[in-house]
Image 1: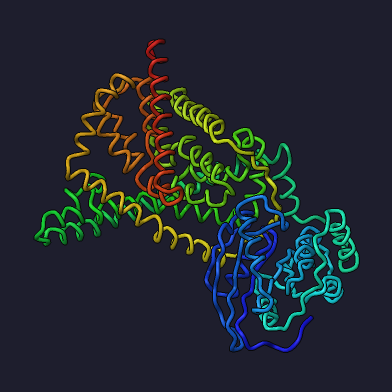
Image 2 (image 1 turned 90 degrees about the vertical axis):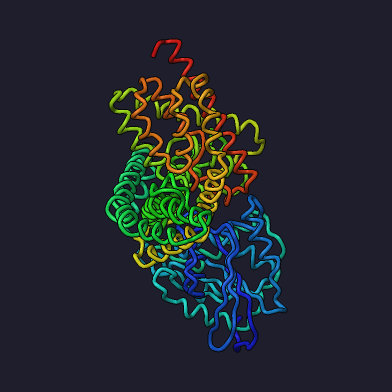
Length: 584
């Protein structure tokens, strides 16, 4: 099974079930800092990295996690195609990453791979946790049973990783190809291997195991989910608003803006100066790339993006998100989705940008479309929510509840309509529940940094393009024409004063300010509900729109935004006519 070292470059393919730590092993070995997560579906694309060891060059490839060699999703297809491309004659090898605390479940894939006669190494990841769970695995015996080298390691603390890399250089003898096994034969083989190589010892449940049971309990699960969701929103609001009010807003106002405006004043070409710094000092009204663009991206959106992914990263690595998906799966299944759609929707309660980016974890375009619509229509972002509550409380609690109840009803009806139009089978939730693990601070920081890099590389340029487009439209007078055009429809269809028109344009840049500007209009309670619902739904902010373009393509983004606009008009108009009928 193992022999002398080779002197040629090798291609190493990481294969394994979801949640077995493949991406973290990839990051450990290549030092690329690839994003990792503790729930299924994170690795939705194939990642490659190059490194050298003992003077030899390697290409390490990390594909999506799979449970078997059967295709159930796009991610499965990508992983299986990667496996089919393994060429033993070229020196390719497969590293099957196994969760050593769940040997029986993982070995089904191992035996399927071995039956294909692929040159393989089995890596028993999370080896440090086996002793805490009373699991004893006989490595030599397991190696004999599988017909391949077995290397224990822990991607979390790095132990055994160097031994695994050493094994990459061995001359491997592929297991004898046995052909495809039926389900009964496969699981019988798994049982024989486990009986001979693993021994379990009695031990008491740990605190984390008891907590895991509680978060999956029919009663305790929903209660824990509600506590986690509310706590997440409160923490994100505290961190986000703290960064905006105490750090970023003062820094922009006192230092950055005066510097940029002063710099623009020295540019002799007026058009170029306005393109960069806009017109005036108002960061939302100037439409300058270096003023409005920077203000929206760094002051308004980034603090909430940072806060959300800080909390979200902790929940990922702790292992709670798969349990949240299981608890919410039944409710989301009625909308043609499964529980993992709850994760992007939860993010959308704070900021739509990270929510839209997180739809990458979903396995089909149908799920992504349904979930995106739910993100945009189910509730406003956290700053807009805060402003609706702050301004709406002057009308009373029933008015505030009516706003959010109307938004939920419109989102539900829209999702049902989309689900009926987009034909396709509902996706069943099939996920591994990883053990709760205390996250490592260094790994959390590395993951957060990788997401920040993604933000600046993907989202910030799109926001700059959006602000540039708004600037050009403003210079050409298009925005003024549109503002005038919507005054009459706003009065006739929505029953709102004509002063709502410029607020609609501003809402594309900053949603919470659009709600705040309703105060001078002195709206009735019914008008406030109609205006709040419409401004929350009619269009995403510029950052969300161009993130949507990045994720769904321009045509797909326009379809979804068109749906949201239609829902906003129909929903707000229905509310207006109902209130008018009852004299509200």
